[in-house]
Image (cartoon, rainbow, N blue to C red; front, top):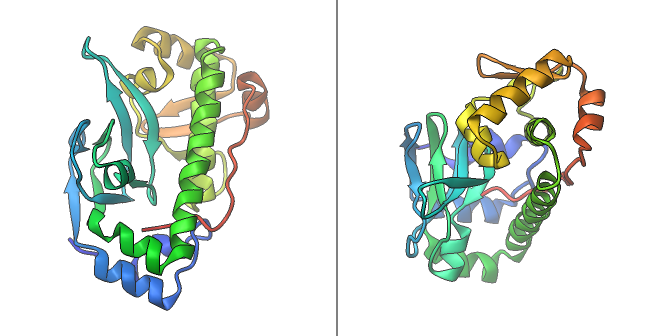
Length: 244
């Protein structure tokens, strides 16, 4: 499977920065492969030296770190259009892993082209850095808030944040539902909870008429009340996000 950048449906989404012809030609010539990952497969492994950049084209993934006791913390949910591996490309090694949650496909870009990107295409490079900084601010805010919240509030916050990220990218067709293939183990690792606490939290949100996950679909019954309950802070979602 190889999707030419010229035919990429993601770049036509309003959330992403339009390419100039020169930039599109550069990215198109840089793209080395288009790989498929099965659910549970690691596309990047913690401690990996070098390695290419990957842009998630289709599917869902998670970025995570492991602990000596074999536990893990999910640092972020990777959605279509997100680029991973930048840390390895710029620092030489990478301190986290990236694992597919669903069948997923990734565009592969060699890390060696980063110097050319920054030197010859500064507008695209700045947009890439801006997107990375916005992701960092969003993650910092979520982690700071989740540490103070009850378990149901943590799950509600993750629901709303993921829904808004998908909607901003044009991947939610209006309404109050969106795909949500994360399982209880993913929610537990993302929110710092046990699976028992996740199950109880989902039951509480359902009984309160706030939200539910039904066969891989997130349903927001009452977004306003859910946001108040989670003390939700909508992430900054400026247009012009870089897409590699």
